[in-house]
Length: 244
Image (cartoon, rainbow, N blue to C red; front, side, top):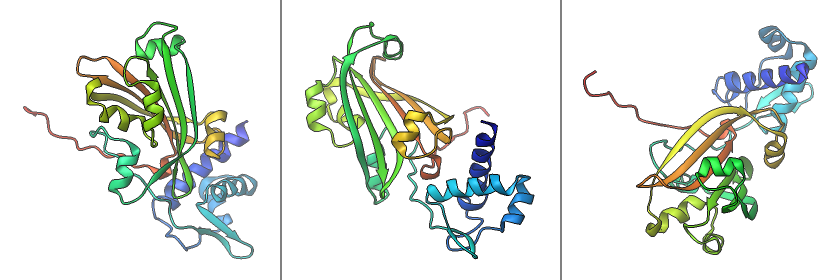
């Protein structure tokens, strides 16, 4: 287990410091294995495992006798944290398109966790929508939306779904969606989410936990997301507080 964690740590550090930062431009060679093992204090075996992981992620390529070449960077979405909008909306603004894959629909009843998060009784009917988000052919995130009965009818959600539950809720003004409380934190990918994203379990992801509410605070959607950080940059404008 310790070796796997070290490999992941070296992989993420290489990606952050040399590739995603632009320190080594696309088309250029990464430093030699000797330089990198000395720089990070690891063995060649660990370094090569980290490099293969970066290769599997499409960030670098290998040519025998030449070395590791940085590939053109992945497309990046830049959602604004202060705007209530879907990933699809941000992608359209950026002139690109986010698609949905592996869409799953499940009508079930709230268990303890759904009851707590949605503030509904255990056993209350809910609809769970799972899907993977795809940007330029690459799986970049996994989303799970949980909607309690009482807002938009479940059959309407299915009929109008084009990738975003949030877009549907916003379009139905009669339900009164006003705002969303969102928490973002770094997590390690579970086996299930990593499998859906076709990446290695234990890798880093940005986890988003959002509760969409009406003006009176009623919760009409619980949205969870696991986003691969190399494909997302979040922006927010911070203003001076009056009196400071």
